[in-house]
Image 1 (cartoon, rainbow, N blue to C red):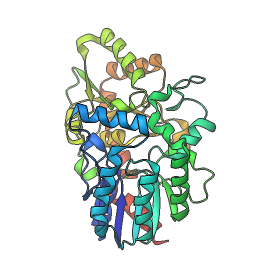
Image 2: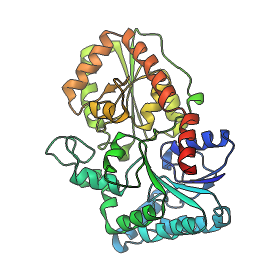
Image 3: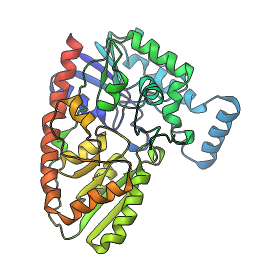
Length: 379
């Protein structure tokens, strides 16, 4: 089959592409590389003109605020038009979400509509922010979330503007039109499956694919100093609950001094990010979730002990009895206790890391996940 993958989140479509290609299919990946992360794509549809200098950024933002016109959208759709001849006659076209080109809805739909009209079966993946997830978090979800870091306390809108945009009428209309044209929508983890529990086109969870062959076991056997790593994406700082981690780390630094080494890295390209945490023992991924994000899975594949989602909600959704991650909570005292237990029992860090790698190999290997997608495409 010829398969067209539209958009990229954290390497999801790159890993799936590799599995599909190894199964003998022709695959083309279109997108912007997930911004600063710079994941490889076959057809690059993105803007760069307004990110090369500070005055261009300011002009871009000012005009958008004054007129609602986003100059970068013109660049994106121009690049799309230049590539239209390469985006036709595929058996499958799969969208990473309903806003894969990051444009305003009217411009976005022109590109989506072209892809729907010029290709065969369409599918939609739920692996990040989108209309049903944003609506679910605001209306149905109970407990902590990226919109409510603490029960009864809302996150300031400025910190979740990317999520809340999906509640606007233009984004909702695009999502509904796209879903109507798709065969199925495929949740990649517990958080997104919960938002789709009433959606008839939703499939069971197909876990996120991970390129396990590129992520060999890489444990630091020197336990004399415990290396803790925290990667920070500034745009997602509050949504990931990084504030809880930072407060906990301040306490840990004072409590253990030179027994720990703490590394904080901000907005690194993917290749640099992977290298930055290579020697860590513990990786702090995110707090406000019930499943593992992509960064967590890749670190687990390398045998790291990871703080992410791993609650009873996760276990029930996946039919598991246990998950080899530290279930991070939006509670500084709990995080300090969890970190302290690991630091004072360092051998357990390596043991948990070995189990974490086995879990990713069993449930997230890109080749196995590609098989699951192919079965869905052919039904």
